[in-house]
Length: 353
Image (tube, rainbow, N blue to C red; front, side):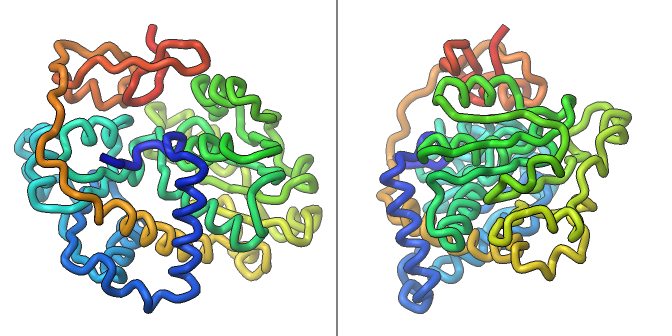
């Protein structure tokens, strides 16, 4: 069964097909109003969301399908102690596709082991966010004509930024990409992402300042400093507001550079930037809906998997990442995979010690 857990698992040919479908939907949305008639999406959002939740709901409704789910786990049996496995096995008996957002890294991967229907990762903690990457790639391709050969600046919280991690994974499928990774040292990309880039021969430069590199960029991808991902409040206070994009700073940028942001923003882009034609983050959010329409059509029309293969029962977590799903669901199997020659958790990608 096809799931979307990590954009890195999506072959370039499959992405090209999904983009072509999304582009077709953008140009002629009325043609698709019944393609998912009778199909049902279960949207399970264990943490707050505006764009992703509304975007997925709207995408399924525009395809003629219906949606149920929750936006607060306290309103579900999760509050009574129900395991993720039991929730997924029950919900996959009702729905044709499951869309999940959780604060636990690797949760969507765990859900896919027990589901009878496709599972879509709509964000798992600070790990991955593959459908935001679909929105990002759709925006770049529509507005710049393609992705190959671009120079990208990723700015802000690159340690906890799941949108950034997914975008880097995606860019391994394209040619001649140059990254400028702009972050304070405390919020630099995780080691497993750095290992992934080296393993895939991706060119990247890590810097702590934005203004020096902005003239070289085709895309500036701003991200917020994510307060909810910090264990230490003092660390957040040291880093908040460290990067703020203003109209003045844009004077040094290329005339056709795209300013992108997964949203929500806090203070990292001033409101006067909104009127600059290079600011495309609200357009990016709209393109995300069309990209998710293409994905839901692709997945929800798959035949239901009546028999799920048996899964090994774990006895204790092999991963020490405190945000890994294995820390709260100890029955999960001990999945291990190689990343840059290093043994990593098969759920959250953290290196195993």
